[in-house]
Image (cartoon, rainbow, N blue to C red; front, side, top):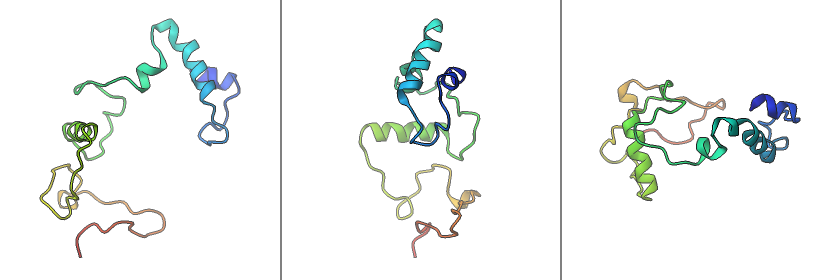
Length: 116
Protein backbone atom coordinates (compact mmCIF):
# COMPACT_ATOMS: atom_id res chain seq x y z
CA UNK A 1 0.00 0.00 0.00
CA UNK A 2 2.81 2.39 0.87
CA UNK A 3 4.49 1.81 -2.46
CA UNK A 4 1.19 2.25 -4.30
CA UNK A 5 0.61 5.63 -2.60
CA UNK A 6 4.17 6.66 -3.44
CA UNK A 7 3.79 5.61 -7.07
CA UNK A 8 0.53 7.59 -7.24
CA UNK A 9 2.33 10.75 -6.11
CA UNK A 10 2.07 10.60 -2.33
CA UNK A 11 4.83 12.72 -0.74
CA UNK A 12 5.00 14.38 2.68
CA UNK A 13 1.60 12.91 3.59
CA UNK A 14 2.25 13.66 7.27
CA UNK A 15 1.73 17.30 6.36
CA UNK A 16 -1.96 18.10 6.06
CA UNK A 17 -1.52 20.21 2.93
CA UNK A 18 -0.07 17.18 1.11
CA UNK A 19 -2.30 14.45 2.51
CA UNK A 20 -4.89 12.93 0.18
CA UNK A 21 -7.42 10.61 1.78
CA UNK A 22 -8.67 9.66 -1.69
CA UNK A 23 -5.16 8.52 -2.72
CA UNK A 24 -4.84 6.34 0.40
CA UNK A 25 -8.37 4.91 0.07
CA UNK A 26 -7.73 4.07 -3.59
CA UNK A 27 -4.43 2.39 -2.73
CA UNK A 28 -6.12 0.41 0.04
CA UNK A 29 -8.85 -0.75 -2.33
CA UNK A 30 -6.34 -1.85 -4.98
CA UNK A 31 -3.83 -3.49 -2.66
CA UNK A 32 -6.03 -5.06 0.01
CA UNK A 33 -8.87 -6.43 -2.14
CA UNK A 34 -6.83 -9.41 -3.44
CA UNK A 35 -6.44 -10.52 0.20
CA UNK A 36 -10.12 -10.14 1.03
CA UNK A 37 -9.46 -7.10 3.23
CA UNK A 38 -10.65 -3.53 3.08
CA UNK A 39 -9.77 -0.24 4.73
CA UNK A 40 -12.67 -0.46 7.19
CA UNK A 41 -11.28 -3.73 8.58
CA UNK A 42 -8.18 -1.87 9.72
CA UNK A 43 -9.78 1.41 10.76
CA UNK A 44 -13.40 1.38 11.90
CA UNK A 45 -14.47 -2.14 12.83
CA UNK A 46 -15.26 -3.06 16.41
CA UNK A 47 -12.41 -4.70 18.26
CA UNK A 48 -12.75 -7.57 20.73
CA UNK A 49 -11.38 -7.25 24.25
CA UNK A 50 -8.60 -9.78 23.80
CA UNK A 51 -7.67 -8.99 20.19
CA UNK A 52 -3.93 -8.55 19.68
CA UNK A 53 -3.40 -4.98 18.52
CA UNK A 54 -0.46 -3.69 16.45
CA UNK A 55 0.85 -1.60 19.35
CA UNK A 56 0.54 -4.27 22.07
CA UNK A 57 4.31 -4.76 22.09
CA UNK A 58 4.75 -1.16 23.32
CA UNK A 59 4.60 -0.47 27.05
CA UNK A 60 2.79 2.80 27.79
CA UNK A 61 2.62 2.09 31.51
CA UNK A 62 -1.12 1.37 31.25
CA UNK A 63 -2.49 -2.13 31.66
CA UNK A 64 -4.43 -3.41 28.67
CA UNK A 65 -7.28 -4.42 30.99
CA UNK A 66 -7.47 -0.87 32.35
CA UNK A 67 -7.46 0.59 28.84
CA UNK A 68 -10.31 -1.71 27.81
CA UNK A 69 -12.32 -0.68 30.87
CA UNK A 70 -11.63 2.99 30.12
CA UNK A 71 -12.73 2.43 26.51
CA UNK A 72 -16.00 0.88 27.70
CA UNK A 73 -16.57 3.89 29.98
CA UNK A 74 -15.95 6.21 27.02
CA UNK A 75 -18.45 4.32 24.85
CA UNK A 76 -20.99 4.58 27.66
CA UNK A 77 -20.21 8.32 27.86
CA UNK A 78 -19.28 7.87 31.51
CA UNK A 79 -16.95 10.53 32.89
CA UNK A 80 -14.22 9.67 35.35
CA UNK A 81 -13.35 12.06 38.13
CA UNK A 82 -9.85 13.53 38.26
CA UNK A 83 -7.89 10.98 40.26
CA UNK A 84 -5.64 13.67 41.73
CA UNK A 85 -8.51 14.57 44.05
CA UNK A 86 -10.18 11.19 44.67
CA UNK A 87 -9.01 7.60 45.22
CA UNK A 88 -6.74 6.09 42.57
CA UNK A 89 -8.21 4.40 39.47
CA UNK A 90 -5.13 2.13 39.34
CA UNK A 91 -4.31 3.05 35.73
CA UNK A 92 -0.59 2.52 36.27
CA UNK A 93 0.91 5.95 35.53
CA UNK A 94 1.09 7.59 38.95
CA UNK A 95 4.53 8.87 39.96
CA UNK A 96 4.21 6.79 43.13
CA UNK A 97 4.52 3.75 40.85
CA UNK A 98 7.87 4.92 39.49
CA UNK A 99 6.53 6.56 36.33
CA UNK A 100 8.41 9.64 35.17
CA UNK A 101 6.06 12.36 33.91
CA UNK A 102 7.47 13.83 30.70
CA UNK A 103 7.57 17.60 30.32
CA UNK A 104 7.33 19.30 26.93
CA UNK A 105 10.20 21.20 25.26
CA UNK A 106 9.16 24.49 26.88
CA UNK A 107 9.95 23.12 30.33
CA UNK A 108 6.46 24.12 31.53
CA UNK A 109 4.10 21.62 33.08
CA UNK A 110 0.73 22.22 31.49
CA UNK A 111 -1.31 20.75 34.33
CA UNK A 112 -0.60 20.47 38.05
CA UNK A 113 0.28 16.89 38.84
CA UNK A 114 -0.67 17.13 42.51
CA UNK A 115 -3.06 19.36 44.45
CA UNK A 116 -1.38 22.45 45.92
